[in-house]
Length: 214
Picture 1 (cartoon, rainbow, N blue to C red):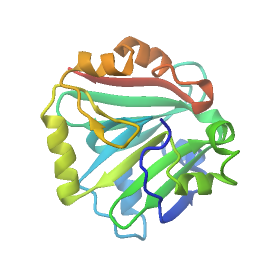
Picture 2 (picture 1 turned 90 degrees about the horizontal axis):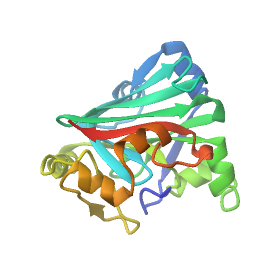
Picture 3 (picture 1 turned 90 degrees about the vertical axis):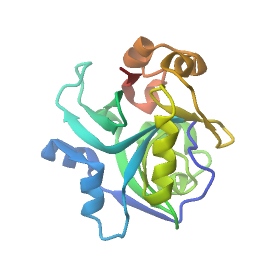
Picture 4 (picture 1 turned 180 degrees about the horizontal axis):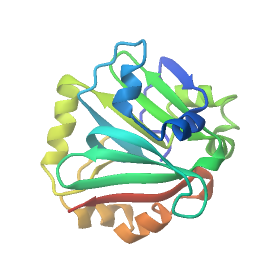
């Protein structure tokens, strides 16, 4: 599920040296990135996107992981989730990552895409990562919402005892009512997610994934 939205993105901007900058800084949040941009983007909340999984939160933070859990350079994304939920992911920092800001008239997102994902999934259809991102082709991102758009997503997750909700291939939300229902739908377990990132292929670069509710 690498296409999170069927709208084309009108504006695509690349952040150079994303991983190197994160290594120098140690950590930075999505809100801090937006605050430093010369663009007018209101952020009341965010939604973390991982291959169709959607986890709402108040913010998300990129963290440099010097060795990572598997003895290789890594970085993580930790979501400041709604209520007693836990969402974070660890990525292999060696795969040549780029971070992009995507914008349309009514929503913005940050997406990170590795060279390996682009080469494997998109290179035959798009001439560059930029073109692929403009078409909405990315597996990992953080959508930025404000006002009623954010309130809708906040209320959606608060009505359930699930750790996250999902987007079907047609773009409609699928709302599990519990953690067990969520994992039945994705055909996995919390332990399998944590150790295999939900069975993600190596070229995606995601090493671990936690999506749970206490």
